[in-house]
Amino acid sequence: MREPKTELRSYLDKLMYRYLNIKSLRREIRIISSWKDKSNVSVVEAGAYFLALVNYSFWRIILVELAMLLSDSEQKSLLDWLKKAREHASPLEPARFITNASDDRHELIRPREYREIIDKQLAQIGSLQSTIDRVKGHRDKAIAHLDRIYFNNPERLYTDFPLGDADVEDLFKLVESILATHYLYLFKAGVKLEVASVSTVDTLLRYAEAFLKVRMDRDLIARGFRPVDYLEEA
Image (cartoon, rainbow, N blue to C red; front, top):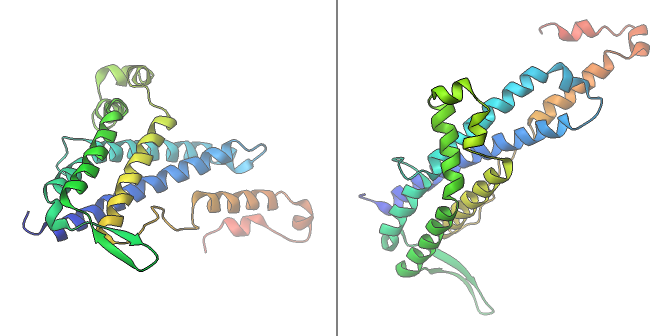
């Protein structure tokens, strides 16, 4: 690595971007789930297959990306980044913000201390290795490849590699904590790992639900409202 200070910052940025993508997908899945929990919602029934397809696709993308981020066999991953940051702790020049009564400043973190921080994070990842292996099991047996056993008996996948939302949540929290910590140290700025957007699936479902209600409003139809006009292409 010729310029670790520059290259590892750019590498970290790319990992954060990929993490933000799957965090956004997970948010959309939760929104869809919250709509399914509502009673008497026409749009959920009307779009049931599509919503199920979205949920299915997003979940698979999340598992593939998590496996990439936390695999020790990938050429690029969070593990790879941590190991390289540990190796180049000195040229990276990580710093933490210090505030006191006299002044506020950034203070360089000594290479030895920075390596100790990374070692603890690697140990945290190791403590969740069983969950990571199950995520990789889903990816390897049913997503990236079609294993004969799980193709013929898809329900067996969750028996051999049990994986629930709580397991994925643990991985999300750990990845986010590690990324945010190093962003703070290397870019000297805090970061909120969230995609700021109001255009979520919730917006689409609310508009669709509103239209389904309006098109059944007999008073509006009696006054000349024609729902079919709004179903035609502009």
